[in-house]
Length: 312
Image (cartoon, rainbow, N blue to C red; front, side):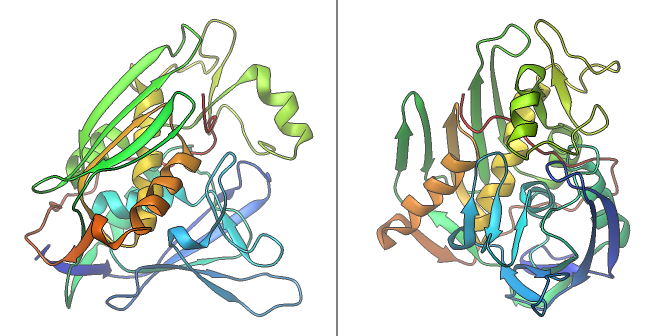
């Protein structure tokens, strides 16, 4: 496969599950799409409205409280898109139509594994159009309290340097530096699950969130330990999940990025805000055609993620 060309799916694939926040059944069908179309959601099942197309772009983001939401929340929207977006970006899938029958993506096992497995099972095909990249030309930085996010130039590829710092010994301070490449994404990032604190559960339920969360799709953190009987998939699974989320949110740029992303105590809102700051000045970036920065990978078992605190 020539990875200097754009890609799409070889065939359609369907996945079903429940929404982590709504607890409602959710079904998606990933379908092949044409060059330069990007990732587009086809939202069906809207009462009194025909199906609506929602492009996965940062300009379409309408909420970032506990997940990333695109579209108009009063009519047609899709929430918790970050895990599928992460899988697409991680594997180098440029163009796909995501048909979804409700307002929330299925959470699956709380990571990106099952999305990755589905994409790899059906396979990718190259299209005639050259792949285009978003090259960072000068540093862009945003801050919010002690948290920050920044994009800086790099000669090639996309590196993420993500650090979290929680006031609990179960997590503490963790940092992960990761160069985005398909095989490494599948083995090192895609299996990292979403996480949440038991102390927050009742408050989240009252607010209408986490209604579908369980030990099957979330790493639950108690006072001094992880509640899940199987424990963690990685010693630093928490920060790896934050990397997974960042890859998915930054895919809303609409192009693979050539540059480096750095984040401290960030989350969905900071990830989207850094894209807003980047695109606010045309001098910050260039759209280029260059040598491939993704590598092909064989099928590897993986999974998607859900809700973790946006800022901490």
